[in-house]
Structure formats: C-alpha cells, structure tokens
Length: 441
Image (cartoon, rainbow, N blue to C red; front, side, top):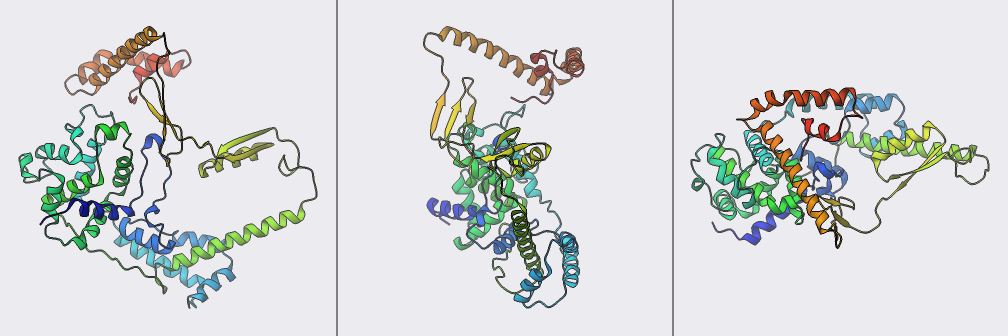
C-alpha cells in the first residue's frame, strides 16, 4: 500500500494533540497533563484522559467523606446539585456507593507491564542520553529510527532480527510495512494508543522536536514519527497488538459511577467559594478605618518586603514568611518581555525567559578586542581540566579499568571525602568536584 508522506504527517500531528509537551528536568516547567484536551468540557476531558492514560480524575471517596464530615461541603449546595440530576439518595448512601465502585475499579486497573513498553523505554533512554552514559548509543546522529535499526540485531529482546536489513530501511517503509493492513481512517486511533502508552517519553519528544536550536536535538534528532516507526515495528516483531479496541464515545449526560465524583467535586468547590466569600465579608465588616494598607492588618510599616515569582510553588514560602514576622510579600512576573538566550563563553546555553517562550534574541560571550591571548590561555587550561575530568569519568565507568582505578585511587577519594565531611569550608573546591561520585558533565 502506498503511503503519502503528507497524509502520514497530518495523521501523526492530529494524534499528537492529546499529548502535552514536557520540558526536560534541566529546566522543568509545570505542564497541564490535560493540555491536549483544552477544547473539551472539563469532565469530558478528564474521562477521556483516564481512558487514554489511566490514573485518577477526581479525589478518592475517602476524601469526599472527610470533607463532608468536617463541614467543608455545604449540605444545601450538594442537595441542589444532586437534585438537578435527579438523584434522591442520601449523601451517606452515595459515599458508600462511590467507595464500592472504587474498590471494584482498583481491582481491574492493574498496572501494565507490557514488554513492548520495557523495550521502548530502554532504547529511548539510550538515545536521549545527554552525556551521562559512559558508552553512548552509536549512530545517534542519523536519527532515532536509523540508530535503533542499526543496533536492533544485537538486542535479544527483538526476535527475528539478525541484521539491519531484516527491518524496513526508512521511516516511510516502516509505516508501510505495519500499516498496510489498516485503513487510513484507523491510523490516528493507532497512533494515539501508542503515544499514550508512554506519555512521559512522547511528551518530551514532542517538546524536543520543536526546539530546533537545541544542541542535543541538532546532534541527535528525534521526532514523534521516529518514535512511532520504532514502536510499530517492535510491536509487529514482538507479536503485540497494533490497533487495540478503544472507547471513543464519551458520556455527556446522565449519572453513573464516574459522574458522581464530578457532582461532589463541584459541590465541594462551590462550598469553598462560599466559605471564602463569607470570611472576606466578615473581615471587612470588622475592620476599622485605618491608614494606608502597607503593613498588613495593623497598617504599620513592614520590616521587609519580598517579591516572588507568580507561581503556585512560591505560595507556600510566602505564607510561611508572612506568618514568621512583620513581612510583606508580593507576586511578580519575573520576565520583562525580552525572550533571550545567553550563551556563555564555555558554550553552555541558558534561556533567560519563561520555558514556554522560544527565545528570539541570542547573546553570546566573546573575547574582548585585544585580549585574545588571555582567552587562548583560558581555553588551554579549560581543555586540560575537561580532559582530566573525562579521564577520571572513563576510568570510573570503564569495565576494564574500573576495579584497578577504585583500588588505586581509594586513598585520594577517601581523604577528599573526609575533608568534605570534617572541614567542608576548608576543603578546596577542586577536590570536592573530583571526589564527587555523582558529578555530571
């Protein structure tokens, strides 16, 4: 069956919409796992996401029971929402019913241990390594599919492959070989299934494929098409299902075991808003006229004012600081509208803008005019230091040299470790770096 490249690309892009991009750990950015469902109502989105990814869409019944017993859910609010859906059972009966449904679903939602996922994870970790591996995966400059095809004959987990020629020679050939038995109308469904099998990896691949200026992407390119080609060929070799059954129609009305938690959550949220507004009104009525509100409740001048990033992770810190004394905190967007990437003289690139923004400006450090000699001396010492670190890393991780290196260098590393423990401030930084067993490049 002939496959048009443009049609295949469009089907892959459509299927990838359910996957949100995930930033690498080096500059992690909190991402909404439902970002691929933003065009759907919330309750439909979480049900669809649970079908695809698994996991939990709403709080456990025990959490609802605790909130109900502690008065966090206003009875009249809950009764009104239940009545709107024709539910006449008591809250206690509904809590028992949700708990029974929870016990049933927990017995059926067992974690998957698919051998296809294990093999894919192994090769993705090897290809996407960023300098930690002592023996990097070969042929990575050719792309993920080409690199995997070159080394697959050496993997005992891939049956029936003795040499690269036993596998399709290119991406398009791989898709043609696997998708030949399926009509085009089913392709997106197949792709979604394989994307959501490993959403963490595919989310990172989606992010990285968009970063054309990323040095690792430039050196070792990977795309969602690469991922799909490897996974589909592996699924065929391992005899795994290519196109499993999926439930595509979502319930949009009526009440069942999955929508009861939604009604309870809505009642809980509405109750919280009502409690909050009531508390704010009460505080406002009790306040007496005072001067400018620059010092919190008393109107006095604060001992210090601190600005934090507008981020939910900062709220905890701000709350503790304000409780500790007469301090005032503010949230501020720490970005001034200049999406910039700073390249240090040593070649390390740092984004000076939010992770979701692509930098448009490049600022690189270069030797000042007339100081080229100093730069060359600096480069020489840096190359020497890097060579020494690379040598130590190789000796520590090389199978042939590891045992001799450990025995021969034990005294030095032991002394450095003792110095770091007993006199950390007096121990030279160089010794600390050389003796650190977890140091990465």
